[in-house]
Figure 1 (cartoon, rainbow, N blue to C red):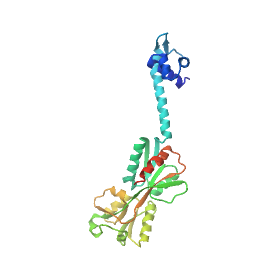
Figure 2: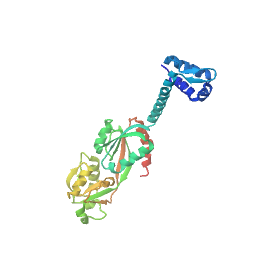
Figure 3: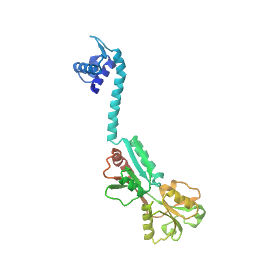
Figure 4: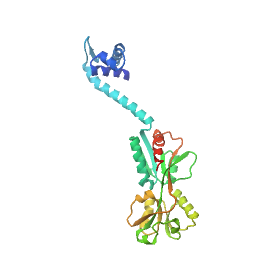
Length: 294
């Protein structure tokens, strides 16, 4: 079978119609150039070039062979570039898990920055609650998770990627009964839609700890795992709810949002320590630091 180096020698000659100029283009002398072409003709089994003392031209076989040889060289070059891009994380796939709340604000920004940095990367996006993301990361089904701080084993590593305010969601018809700048204390004894201790455990634990610290006991009427269901219940007048600011972009008629006077909530990105996906390495090295100013 012929070699790529032989194809390069052959293709160079018809392009300049001269052995000497072809040799100069390839940074070699004429004898090895002619030898490579003779070897190629031997492997192919036909004469490809018509030679005389003054000119060189393609034979009929050479005319048929030339475009295919040039195409093979282009494919080989493209394959080389693709391999180099993949090794640098500029090509490949990244599987990202995200919570419903991060899907309204953080995820679009992550995707935008990845597209700008590595447009050749394809993404697999999966909306999962934080607990399910941890399970998927441990199983190797996700490369990266955007989730709330969550108890994790030593196989996983996390970095803070964003903070956001808590927003109080209240039925529009009851807005006058609530202060314009509410605090946790204003929820004491009020009908409240709480996060599920199973599906949305990180948010459930965070709010439970804050309520206990502030000696606030809301009247919990429902436990819900997804924020859009929670807002639907608020609109129906079932009770108030606390959501992350990013999720407030999910507009519901009949709901009023007010910023709660309390410390912000955190969003982290998490990955397996042993994940050797070059795209993940690119994200950690070039994308994640760009969120430090957020």
